Length: 510
Image (cartoon, rainbow, N blue to C red; front, top):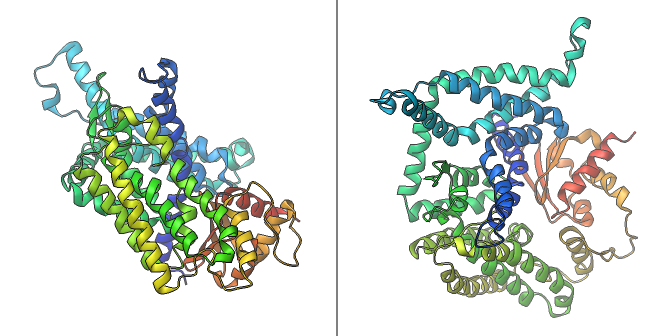
């Protein structure tokens, strides 16, 4: 029997996955907005294009979450999400009551301007929560009504065409709730935001630790959305209200960036140092084989801030070491805050974002000595722990298994050339990979749903015990997580989305 807790956890995981789609467009918004500024390319229409994305994040979340939450990720759910968002916002704006003190003593155009400003503030505060809720409703309505049959005289509106209609009616009710309760919602969000900011370094530490600890479940996207898109407010020169550490940073708020700055020392220096420690700890005869893989992972983290390949390389082998990594991440946010360093990113805390956003930052050069210290700390901690506890990190596998493991890791994390096949086994055609993964997952009858995030397959299964971990490892999996009954994740690297599509194709094959 599936318990309420298990259902709730599975639901949160699904939400975390759904948030990935709208989050994926934010690097484009940040890049366009930054490159178009006068101190870089000075191209106003490029900056305006980036600002257009940031200004409509609520609707993008409604569409993206709906598609991510819906089975088959069908576009009809995205359309329903947009419909739900517009219905909710417009309904709420008509019903909301403007506080008397906002318009006290004002008449005519001045009063109209005050009312419009009040409503714009409410939209700025709540557009993303509204977008997420509208997306969840639309995705759920798609899953429930995509195959609905209506009477013949209404048949045109049956099936997927019914989804935007029923979503609109549901979100009409949501708009009523927000219309009468919107002031209380914004007051709650404002209180939560002020509490986090008032916590200072303690708040930064807790957020940094949670960000890394929740990575394994994919739930870190939820706390990231709160910190980066909702915490804090800033009013631009044009009067626009901007919320969230990330959005405020790119809007020019000098106090923004505290919830991002601490990731730069970890991703640019700390985790590359961990790769060096794993290389030095590898068996001498294996260093040549794992060196390229570790160097690629280190460069990926340093340049782009993508760290999951490194973290999953030791997360399961040494959970205590990963806990130390989480604590060091929290401390990095505290240190950067104490030094008044403010850095921001559109994608992640790598060199590319550091350079592009350097002029928007506060005391950015101080990150370099902090990063150097973190390089020493990470290298020392990892080198000691690997040797002390004989951790089987890359290159330290028992003799006779390195060639197979190394090929699997190389194929999974860094596709760019054919990896060496396992001894006595010919390379498998790409078209057969989905079928091979499906067999290792227990067959089509065992797989209820398969989706992907950045580096993982997210699975709903009839029986997680039927997973063949040995076969999955041979195919390139780096780890298997059984997080709740019937729920599992397979860590395979950046090919996750492609492999998920191939598995889905194999499931539909006759």
